Every structure is written in structure tokens, then in C-alpha cells.
Length: 175
Image 1 (cartoon, rainbow, N blue to C red):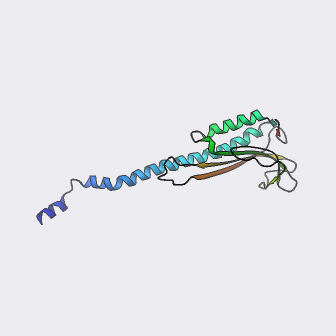
Image 2: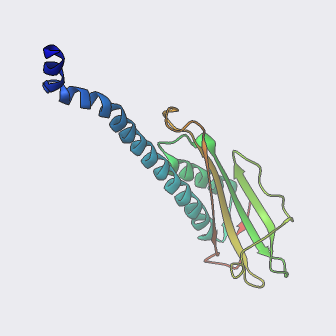
Image 3: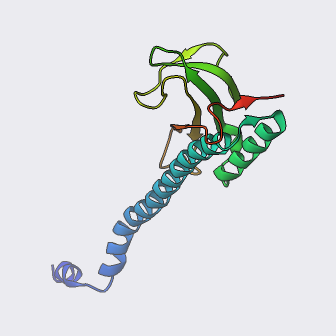
């Protein structure tokens, strides 16, 4: 009985036992925070890509094939260090259809299919003025965690951005 009481009163290894209980929880919280920060950083890059794509195209009066390739290359640089192969980007010029919507004048895409020329798209109220045009940039990116222990499935992030042409009423597409 004396040995049992002596064992219960002993406190020499208490810190090691507490550490053994708390270390896995603390490590999980640390790596979870790192993973959450990575996902939020990727989300911010997706938003930046949408805004930059629309802004780059809206700055010109016309866009050629080589300029569009340069734009997609610049957009792929923004997503770094995440793989750009997963970035589905669509850049579209919409003109007013006279009914509050937009008609696709031209559309280019990377890693996905562009919108069909002549098709109509819904545009938020006030974005497309009567007789005007707007550049729409859309991106979809699937974020894959570097550690599948914390985030088991990929997270799909999407964003879109509208920009009005600056130098002309529409941005033409040349080849």
C-alpha cells in the first residue's frame, strides 16, 4: 500500500505525460493553421487572376492571338507557386443585347472551353450599359492540399470580374 501511495504522490514525470497528451493536438492545430493559410492565399490569387485578366484586356482597343497568349502567361505567373495546369480561365467580350443581357462577341479560354460566339449571358444589373460592352474574366481553380491528412478532398474556387473597355466602346479580337 505504501508503494501505491508513493507512486500517486510522485510528480517527476508529470510534465512529460502532459506533453505527450498535448503535443499531437498542438501539432494538428499548427499544421491545420498552415494549411488554412495556404488555401486562403490560393483563394486570393484566384481573385487577383480574375481582376487582372479583365483589366489587361480592357486596357486595349483590340487583342491579338499573341497578346492573348501573353495575357494567359502572365495570369499563370500569378498563381505560382500553385500549379497553373489546374487554372481554368475564360476571357469574354460581351456586348449589350438590348434586353439587359450580354451577347458573346468573342471568347478565349485556357484549360477549358470558351463561350460560344453569339450566345447570350446574364449580366448583373448596371454592369452593361445600353449599346456598350464589357470584358468578363472567369476563373475556376481546384486547390489540392499538400497534406491529405487535414484536407481530404480538393476545394474548388471560382471568381469572375467585369471591366469596361477604357480606350474604345468595345475591345476587338484579331488573329
